[in-house]
Image (cartoon, rainbow, N blue to C red; front, side, top):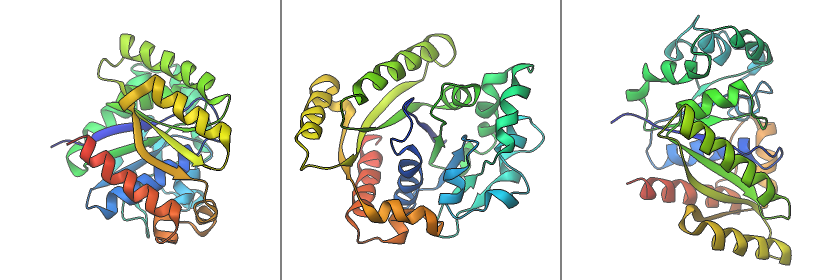
Length: 255
């Protein structure tokens, strides 16, 4: 059984991609799955949010993309999350420029993951919000995309951009790529507009919308400053419970 590789992607910033990545990873680890988080964002938020210090990484995803290290050499353990992390830091911003000149530039991550595919059940790739060579590496490596989205007016607009990108990558670079599902995040049922947009999303995308809904939750927002996922930071919080529920749904949906 080789790992299922998923990008957590949305071209709109600030929609909770990193929160989704680290909490889904911790949730999957709690239900007994072996997980690797790949941080493809130069800001390194998924790295820090997993309790790994991005400033003192001996090796990072940057070294892996430039093929000077393997994932097995560069990965770290999330101390509280129970999963592995291929970390990122500011160095990664330079990789963007360096990769342009190289051959197989959009397939570097895919090739690197082949070396550890049997070590994991799930690989979750946290992509930067822009469509860059880094995001492209994620999309070329993945079997599918999980899209976290807020139920607000502009969300559907950003989604159509992402769907077009996925179609292009599917047609030209990675025929396996598909949307696995849409996850409604930062949801506040008291806001009528959010309920309306949620219904619109369900009407439009049908069973591609996960049943799990992640509520707006202070504890989830606080957790990264303590260097751990919300799922382990406050397991009793509504947000943590929703992510464990989502992890279960993910496992069930994929059989």
